Image 1 (cartoon, rainbow, N blue to C red):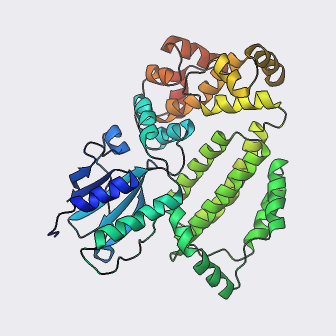
Image 2 (cartoon, rainbow, N blue to C red):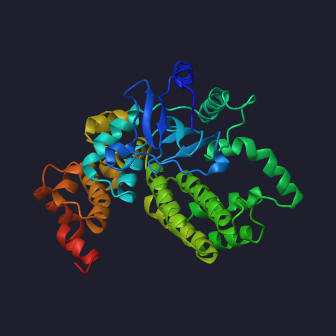
Image 3 (cartoon, rainbow, N blue to C red):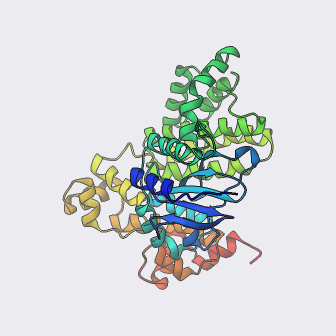
Length: 400
């Protein structure tokens, strides 16, 4: 149990780093500085606050933690009673598509989207290096009462883990004669993805997998999952390079990673890599932007990244750096439909997830995607899918 006042260290950290910091006792905030700035997406979604899990061997250490909502925290663990937590932080901006994906995966009420957007805009965005060295500062400040020399932080997040483990892993790989896939094979599979060559890409993937995989964790299943997640990131970059809109590609990537994390066998994870590659190539074939001019591509990208935001011709044209009338004309020539129809169709396509997999009211889903009312949403839904939202929900869940 702590027998000293931490207020001085808390103030030093805040005034040096300008980030919120709190002292927690048995999971409850005992002191925060500045007062009232303790925030978490858990509060918005009505869940318990961030829970820090640790064991006795992690006492007097710094941990870099993230929540399922993408928030980053730095935590110093004194004992099983007292913890110091700084944050939340972000190391990259939270896109609109990421919030929608979060709402889907975490089953968050869609009415909370605006609050989540406002919340993420309020979180400090820092570099991975700043995140790491803030942990060093906390380690120095809060371990001074316990030891003469502050222990180095224990990096948990992937950003800081890379910094300290790079040279160590390089040495281990050299000892085991491990080599990453040759560059020409990676380039080959990227080109096969671009031309939708599923058979060729699968053969190249098989050739790559004949090489020994890197050991990325002590547990074989965890190591394989980490390796397949790396493949997912590589495929994501490849399809973006091929012309798929980044927000669509990242949504696919997030979904695949969530599926990987739920798997419980090495065989299942290994087989999933091939299925993932097939889906990315199908996505490239369906969503490629190579045939569009730069203004139309910019417009399509902006629309796809902001389907749950208000979209006007003037705003889209401003983003594409062309006059609204010109954009409207060339958009219809290249895409085959008007901007208004394209936006409506994409919103209907995206909304089908909520129809099929949630119990949200149709009116709430219509409002979420900026349809003026439920009646109009149902009319447009049936126009594009030849079925009503309620019929679509019943067909997706026959037991209803």
